[in-house]
Image (tube, one colour):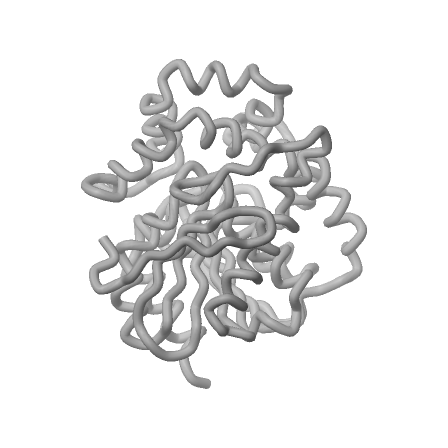
Length: 291
């Protein structure tokens, strides 16, 4: 994976972030989702590197990045803290401004990063999510059934940690299978990396803290910023066969949070860059490329 990319660990104020770096041109920061690592971008990273300097980190708590101790308010895993890590990473790499894309949890971090550092993000893409506050406020039985993990992972320590830790490989494969709609998507080195990293009890705990933060302190931050809109151009992609497509007017809900929105569904499930790498690559090249 990531042929011709280099790897380094960037020490930020809050965490040590594993970063994969490759290519040349305008910087493009790619953020992964749950329960994965930056390896989820492997199918398109090398092609993107022909036009962009591609930066692929593991979020704090995930993969090969560090797992800071949490706190009673879950603030070390707030999207604000995770976004601050990545702003520091990009400063360290001498990128004052950059393009940004995130999938799943990474898209929530990307949303917060764009709100907290609006002068730094030139264009933003979010993949297969609606805004966190919207999803919680509009929860119904259908959503809670499909996304039960949102309510399981936020249970107090250490109930979900013990349940997942009993067989982390089974849990990970079950989650990937539940949300994927494209046969043969997960295999080879990326899947092996997910299994290796997610089998670490520290990762299981940190990922639970990510969701606990989303249901508490992240909502406080989102409510405080409810009148603030994303001002840079926003691309929204989602899987036509997934829960987000069934549940939301995706462009409609994002138009409530951003001034300049465009996007469409790709023929896949939740894991857009892995299930539909060609469509994702084409969308990114068009959106992030020269005007």
